[in-house]
Amino acid sequence: MLLPRIVIDDLVRRALLEDLGHGVDVTTQSLIPPDLRGVLVMQAREDGVLAGVEVAAAAFAVFDPALVVARHRQDGARLKAGDAIVTISGNAQSILSAERVALNFMSHMSGIATNTARYVATIAGTKAAITCTRKTMPGLRAVQKYAVRMGGGRNHRFGLDDGILIKDNHIAIAGGIEPAIAAARSNAGHMVKIEVEVDTLAQLDEALNHPIDAVLLDNMRGDILREAVALVQRRKNSRNILCEASGGITFDALPAIAASGVDLISVGALTHSVQALDIGLDVTLGK
Image (cartoon, rainbow, N blue to C red; front, side, top):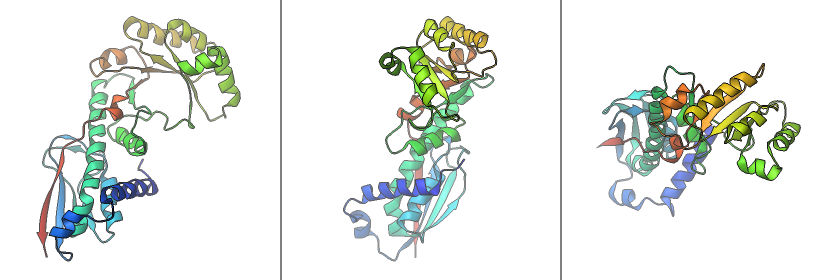
């Protein structure tokens, strides 16, 4: 599923305006003749998974619609160091002024996709799927969650308006699990799913007495997690209740968590602790 162009253009426009400051790239305009043409090749400097091709291309197109972008790889591709990703040709000033925004987006998004693919590969062969969270950088959620998909992961809810997740503070303020679920069910439309966060087996047992769609098993590990999954299997009857493991998920703990039988493993680190993929560029100038 591609990102809508209206989302991409808005992001890159704001990023370009931020980078331009008062509207002038003083370095480029001081050094590069206005009529000089150039060619820029973005390429991987390390192995990884690609994401952000269209966002990077949009950065050049928004800055200067006359620039020509040739795509050599598509999002989701496995990259090897040295692989060419895109070539941009046209006005050299425009290329140099837009390149950092393009690289920032592609490097960041590819870093997310690469790390996600690493998590996904680790639990291959189990029923579990890796999913992201709402622990994203403000303003970048759409591209960060897209990058997770390019790495083979799944998306959790995008915002507070597309699913009900009853967490510990909701339960405390609402007066307990039962009144919290009852209030949610009475207000939820027929298309809205309800998930409940539980910390203990006792809370899980209580939540399963009510019409819910998923349980978030928070910070459960080992025998407790396996027992929680077994309890859901025994109690769900005809309901398809998803089990999600969450809370402090580390890479080393993934195999044991996936082996417990959970359906989803949500990992905040996919987006909040990403390391950018090293993507470089080579510029060839000529008239």
